[in-house]
Amino acid sequence: MFNNFSFLFYLLKEKCLGNTGFIYIVVVLVYVLILLIGLWPLDFFPENEVKWLKGKDGVRFKGEELSSRYSAGGIAYTPDPFFYQPDQLCEKGSVSIEILVNPDIELKKARARIISFYDNVNKDIIFIDQWKSYVDVFYQESENPSNHEYKKIGVGNTLLNNKISMLTITSGGSGTFIYVDGKLVRSYPDIRLFTENDSVIGKRVILGNSPEATNAWSGNFYGLAVYNSQLAENQVLSNYQWWMKKEDSLLSAQDALISLYAFNEGSGLLAHSRLGQQNPILIPEYLWFKKRILLPPDFSNLLKPNLLKDIIFNILGFIPLGFFSLWCLFKTRKWKSYHAIFLVTIFGFIISLCIEIAQIFLPARDSSQADIILNVLGIILGIILFNHFWNIINRFGRWEAQSR
Image (cartoon, rainbow, N blue to C red; front, side, top):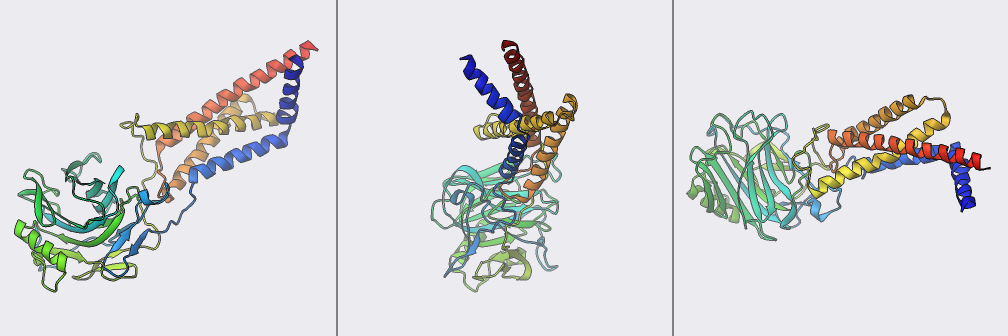
């Protein structure tokens, strides 16, 4: 038994610990592996998964549930904010939105963003999500909220597989109303989506995804109309009939119509408004998104399985970095132990910071302060493990020498 332990110790000490080249190779492999995992799938210019429908009007969005885990889906947006002509009606605090869509699937795990209205600082003001067959409308009650919390209203059993649905949301002084296929299905008399002094003017629109490209929606988008007023019930029904036929007649409340998109171009990078050349929707060749750098830690969902999995992965992934980096510095014998520990910790922090900053260019990854904290914790655990390992090796070496 003693001879077996002695032989194993000899292999570990002389062939591994004593082999400087072996240690350097291991350290390099650890760093390369961490960079690959942190920046996977290395797709800094992902294709925008939005295509024109063949043989009919509309565009198709391919959402994340129909592609790989790291795919961010597709997106389309208005590069310029909405504006209105001097002769157009402008009702402050009022808006009407008409959307003609056909979802591919009823989402079961995550929300998918159908449309967002955001301001000049890229903050969502109003957005509409799909969850299962539900339509949820999110809004903020104040013009300058202190946080990013949203109120939610909505209606279920609306977005069904392979069924074309027309959603109309109207909001103003009399409340907020949700219509499906021209029929009123839910009313909120005490809720308005915009405050009294705000409106859709000056806002931009994103279709099929969130500004960060983290909530991809999947399905066909056939039409969009935005009004700077609150449509009445008879106007909603009249407009639904127009969308079903798309005749040359005018929509109701034409004087308050900001933009109307029928997506009948069939090709190209722009979907034009029927009102003229203003406010075209851009369908970029590559995915466009705006990430926030180093999001603050969010402890509200700490016990969710997916979050716990990320926490464990971020800690365990950096333990080898701390372990083998300190091993490499100890081997050179040019650093005192506390200097080596400090250097490894700082260098690991810089590696983690660089990965998190680079992740703002990857739509499927999130740049987070929490990841850096967890990575540094993993490095510290790796340093502790190496110190224990190094002490065991030294004690075993002394014991072997005394036994001879």
